[in-house]
Length: 294
Image (cartoon, rainbow, N blue to C red; front, top):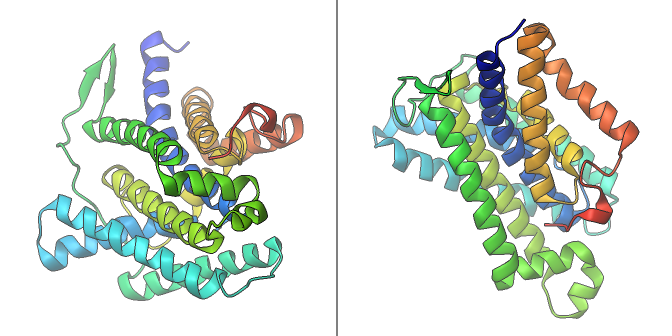
């Protein structure tokens, strides 16, 4: 019989992991709202965030914070280049065609990363040391607090950007009706470009903040990307906030399942939950009628 302290430990760990899934899922939701497609290269932006930070640390010997900011900027540029070269030219392509292109881009980016950095795993220094913090009978690493804190900041910034800036309102208009937004004078393709830029930056941030706990490698984005996609589906693909909620739900269920049943089922739980949501509530936990698109 598991004690309440152990259950609390599982929940804390699940919230931290769920924050990562939620940030990645948020990136999926932003691009889906702007384009109607699912960007399966999102996991590679996660990988690039961690790997580029490690590379910059070893190459430039700069303070960690500068390397993190530069890594996010470089990953953002990769996202912009990807949109300009692979998505923007396909003006009349069907969504499924673009989805296939994103899968191909994912394989391409991962292959380039393997050639550049090899197949080894690389550590990234934690932001605030490695001394565990006792909290209500459970322990949590300082890096977990960074993950939770940055997730809260992203939620706040999301609200401010999409509801209180001209570009955010334009992106929301495009997500509701791109044709009407274009007739109103909004540059829809520019909004798509901005969505890829924001999504790639969020993916890079997720890869950076989780790297001190899990290490990073050229293929780390595969599973994280899939779980971020699961989070977006669970919460509701039409809502960035729903994606964050879905990430929390997925992370907690995954952690409880690993602790109470078996760690061997940890990755399988994500897809079991996804199948259950698709079967019983295809619109996600919030449901399309009860959410606003990002």
